[in-house]
Amino acid sequence: MKFSSRNGGAIAAMIALPALVYYLWLSFSAAGGWVFTSWSAAPGLVARQAIPNLASVAVYGGWLLWQVLLYALLPGRDAAGQPLSDGSRLKYRVNGNLAFWITIPLAALAAWLSPGFVYDNLGRLLTMASLVALAGSVYLFRHGHGRGAQQFFAGVERNPRIGSFDLKFFCESRPGLMGWAVIDIALAFKGGQRSTALLLVLACQLLYVADYFWHEEAILSTYDIVHERFGFMLAWGDLVWVPFIYSLQVYFLASHPQRLPGWAIAAIAVLNLTGYALFRTANLQKHHFRRDPARPIWGKRPAFIRTQSGSLLLTSGLWGLARHLNYTGDLLMAIAWSLPTLFVSPLTYFYPAFLLVMLVQRERRDHANCLAKYGEAWQAYCRQVRWRLVPGLY
Image (spheres, rainbow, N blue to C red):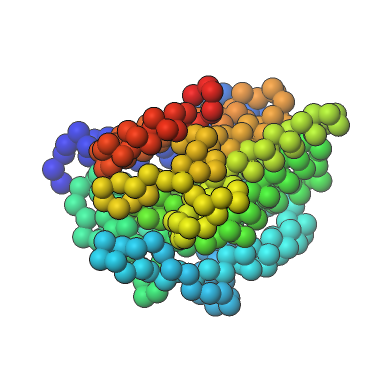
């Protein structure tokens, strides 16, 4: 393999990101949510708590098989994706909402019967998810005849499939996003320690996941599905980052219960619902506009700017107030999920801090891509919709 700066960056990311997840796991499991510094003890902790045993292999393998069966066998409908370069549209099986409402009660029952299993084996399950993500990335690379570390990391194909089974669509939601909800529920049963703070975070995060599957078809118009190639970056992000990073607040509260006064519960709930409303409303407005540009937004025909290529840039609804209020809503929810941990551990705020950096960087990258693609039309759009994330501020 020829080494280049792009390959070097991809290799560095594939080493640094998994190392970061394991470091955070060590910080929460062995240092109570504080910065882990006992480096001499790390190999022993990993050997005892992160090397898979028979039970973790069986549970994680059964989890993946269960999700594959639900995806393949549950009744649902076929939804059309966005047009491909040749004008055709792929069909996607949409039955996630039913899969969610079958899985969650069973997960709660399993957590009730064995309340400490996930908490005690989280490191082993993390390793299992990492190994599956790595193996899946190798398959995707070979299936797409990729070359170089950069393609292994970013992916070769946009829509890899086994028959009609869409690998990216499946991994985007089922084992990772639903796995996040299942881990949350399992951790909440740990030792019977359920504080108001834990229950609040659990409710907020379950709302997010349940809403995702209620609006599952809307993902078909998102950037990940339409434009991103499927390689290590997305596979590892879906299977490892989402379930094991997004659940850190619940992981912390499972062993460090916090009690919140009524006013704090109400304020955090309002913050979360505000973020949820911005996130969901903005995404649905864009999704419906892409499906039907004549569909009214807030009772009026949508306004837009037509580009030279014929694409339409929406300037109505929330998309007329700022270019990415969906990102703002996502960030508000992330903050709401961390506030119930109070200020006992700085690392419970890792996710909103990371998300802020990622979303600002993503918005800047999106701006550069759109400027290159749409030229004067995008400049006109930016003059009309001045604010990036927060009207009047940024």
